[in-house]
Image (cartoon, rainbow, N blue to C red; front, side, top):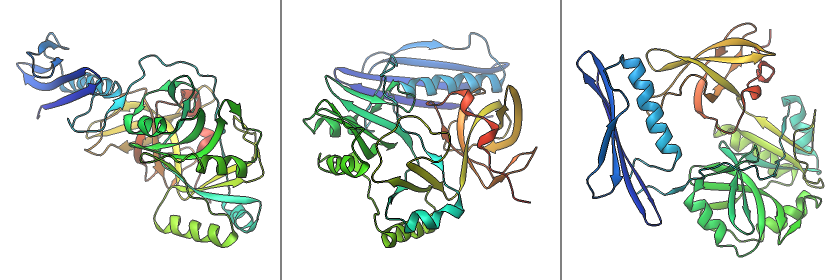
Length: 347
């Protein structure tokens, strides 16, 4: 078996650090070693395995080590955009509006109605940015989180107090709502009013306000283009509605339609040949739903990790059909991985 090694970099303010990790074969097994310190200085060295261990165990140790450093803002490319890391997650008290799905049979009425506008559903992570006394990135659970420095720099360029809602993809934030402006809570304003104010803030570079289709013709054109481009889906928003945090029991003034199904699942175990077993909860009961392959350019998630997968459909009492691993979800709880989210093959 081949070993692995990686060099990671962290540069922020006066910090200019380097971290090296390696998985190597030793006598009777495998070792995981590391070295770290200021760039250009003599690195301190250490090991995570005092004695050689089996490859599977060493691989888990190595992946956990690398993922831990990556979460703290270390990047594999010295020239990569910096990531500002939040060491202590704080409950900000901010709660975002969550969307219920739209059935395909409802699409026509939403497209033809003048009450509903449409936007592309971005395939990223929910992120709100609050600029008040300080700049804070917030996830869908209301906790402060780290964010790419490019996004934070773009937010700083607007010299007003605000709270925006959006979806982060890589080093860009696609903003689609404005909840607070100059100290005033504007969630009671209509979406049309909030969107107009958001567009007027003038963000540049890494923060982009999403495009909105408003007429039936524009909405149909957007739907057709996104479907052709294999995009994730479309979001419909009632332009006269206020912002309502949380998820309604059904319906709602903001709805989402996906061109393919996705599910949040838990890694039950790591298999051989770069795949993991998946499970969801049916009440308190754990239900296996098959395996998913992890591509070679992505880290294999550990058992117990919540991941997002795309699939064609689910079989009753069986597995997901044609699952694809999308990403790790750090913004969800295990209770979110319920069997009720699965869409089944129609008989």
